[in-house]
Structures are given as structure tokens and as C-alpha cells.
Image (cartoon, rainbow, N blue to C red; front, side):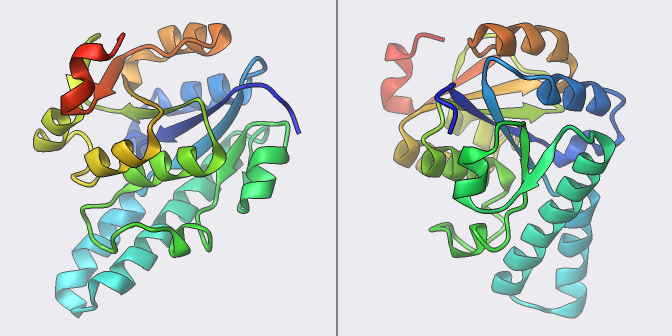
Amino acid sequence: MSSAPLWVVKLGGSLWRAPELRRWLEILAAARRLRVVIVPGGGPFADAVRDAQPALGFGDRAAHRMALLAMEQYGTALADLEPRLTPARSLADLRGRPSPTVWMPLPLADSADVAESWDVTSDSLAVWLAGALGATCAVLVKSAPLPDAVVPVTQLATEGIVDPALPDRMARYGGAVWCVSRDDHRRFAKALDQGNPCGTHLALPDDQQDADG
């Protein structure tokens, strides 16, 4: 297994229509200095689950599993768009494969200690995976414009930029969590090459003043 630092990078489902998506995939697939695990969002596939739940009346447990399947669908599409990305399911595969990987979350996430509700999205699952893998940091790629600053994660959760479960998940992780706007892919490419994250450094309320940004 490579001893290079590992980043977990969540590509938001909102990027599925964005012209920047393919550039992000190229950048992540070309990573050499760092190991990269991509966590796919749910995209339009998760939206279909949200729309279907009130109409069909299935419960949150079923919706949670269907949302994981939505992430698998999006991840399958990402791996097809960029053949240098390798799908992987188990922690052993995610840790051991030298090429950048795309996480296929079933069945691993199905047994994770996360709530089965819409408060948990691929944001929290990415940070959960970062903890499980011992990753250096988790980076959440978002469509929203974001400041270059240290920002309380609770503020971004209130604004709907990250999911409501993320503050608790961050506290359990203990590592660094960053958000990057999808438009900032050029700067991210340099940051990835240098091994230094860029963008918005998320902070828990009690450690915000100690964060180094």
C-alpha cells in the first residue's frame, strides 16, 4: 500500500449538469503526489428518490438505501466518463489501489454509524469515509460560491450548503474538512499537486479561532 497522503474528495451531485465536471474528473484522475478517493453525490438519482418517497410512502430506511444506490449510479457514470478512475467498494480496495478510485458505497455505507434520514447526505458520508480510511482531509466540491476563509460548519449547514449532520460527523472525524467551489478547479489542481488544501476551511464552533485556514 502506498504511504502517500490520502484525500477524500466528494463531487457534489449538483455538478452533473456543470461543464466543469469533466475537468474535475481529469484533475482527480491525474493525481500522483496524493492518493485520492472520490465520493459521488446522488445527483438527479437522489432527487428521484426524494420525489418518489412522499408519493409512494416508503420509509426513511428504504429512502436511505435508495440514496446510496443513487450515489452508486452517479459514481458509475463518473468512472465511465473518466476511465482512469477505478471503482472500489471495500476499505481494503480503497486503501490499496494505487490509482484514483471512485467509492461505490454499498454495502459499506449501509452498515455505517450514520442516521438513516435526509439529514445525512454524501457530505457526511464523505467525512465518515475519511475517518474510516485515516485520510488527511476531506474536500467537498460544491456548486455554491464559497469564501477563502475559516467558516463555522454550523453556518454552512444553516445555509443549506452542507448537510445538517455534518457538524457532528466532523467532531467524530477530527481531521480537516474543506469546501471548494466547482469554479475553483484550476486552483484546486495546484493545491492537489502541492498537497495543501484550498478553499473554505470548515471549523467546529469551539475550535474556529484555532483553525489555521
